[in-house]
Structure formats: structure tokens, C-alpha cells
Image (cartoon, rainbow, N blue to C red):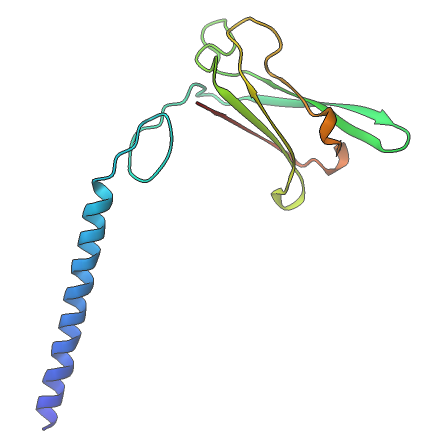
Length: 147
């Protein structure tokens, strides 16, 4: 009787491992068959090209008001997709999202602009006047270029 019980438990264990391995193999095969394009991210795998390979630089301008203190008015993003001597070369026409963050990486304000063609003005300056963000609260600036 004891040997019979051990055989049943052993058989159930092998059956459970076999079913688990089959489920894993099925999910893995399905995930490998998904495709995406390089213009966006999603489930699957594809190379995502970047219009800016060396990063960007940011600085922000502030204004003082006696009642509210120093507030961020602008964020300037430079070194965007430099292509030869032309700023915005490979990134021209793409969307740029600039986010000011504070403690614990919390969002304090966010703006999105479209990058202009190379040499066509101050397309890298983002106006944050309406967001009323205290300069002392800003601990980081996040920039995402997409499109």
C-alpha cells in the first residue's frame, strides 16, 4: 500500500512538471512571434532607433515674485539630435516631452512641444510659466523625444 501511494505522488509530480514546462514553452513561442515597428514600443522585439545618440543638456530659467518666491519659467533643452552643425537634424519634426520632477521623482509639471527644422528658432525652449512650479522643489528634468 505504501509503495502504491509513493507511485501516485511521484506520477502527479511528474505530470505537474510536464504541464508547467508545456505551458512555459507555449507562452515563450507566442511571445517570440510578436513583432513591433521601430517607431514605437510594445510587446515583442525590434530595434528602436534614436534621433539623438549622445543625450541632451537642460537648464531652466526662473523668475522671482515677492509673494511666491522663485518659479521656473522656462526649460531650455540643447544638444538635440545634432547632425553635423545643425541642431535638431535627425530629431526635427518629432515630439519632445519635458517633465519637471521633485521629491520621490513626482511630476511637478509637464509640457510637450514639436521640434522645428534645423536652424528655425528657439524650438528647444519650453515655456513653464503657467505651471507655477517653485524652483526650490525641482530635483530633476526628464526629456523624452518620440515620433
